[in-house]
Image 1: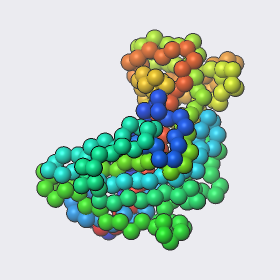
Image 2: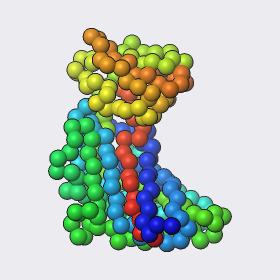
Image 3: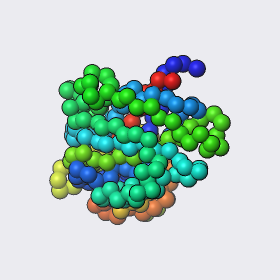
Image 4: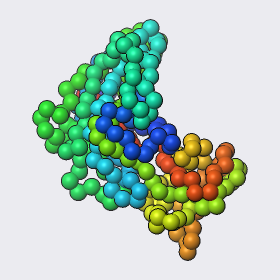
Length: 252
């Protein structure tokens, strides 16, 4: 096995909770990932954020908390998304480390519709990770350790899209029309991409994006890979439930 490896972590953030995170609010709850069995050193954290309202995203400060299971039981929730963190004291028994992402680690020439942060590659010395992670020794998996990560906002972060449904759609369709609306909302391709999983602002499931049509005179079609399971009302905002991705680099 190579001395180095990476793991992608893509947390889910409910659509109804994505607007206007403030300092100290829960960004996402525990999300599990696996690493090869045994201790590994976290040497870099790369975060990729989608833009806000068709423009550049906020440059985030994020606290990442790492935990393991105990007696094959995962840690309790750290609290509701976009609410103050209210983790019970039992969570401290599961904690194995943390890492702080600084807004100054963001790219100096961020793209128009997304941003990337890198801790450990050009970051200030005190921000470079030096954290050894190891899961529960006897969790029943002889090949991999399961690690849990949760995040809290350290400054204002907003994943708003202002992409709204035009006229609403019944369940069972594969195309949802979007509209510029009264606020001159951005084209959907500035916000979403094929493969994104979209929900309405009231957490109704739309599905996985297959493609996004060119903007017509008054609407733009988002095409899905399967019929939508839920209805979406007229003028509901549409969200990508995975607006942030982390690439964790390890040394074994």
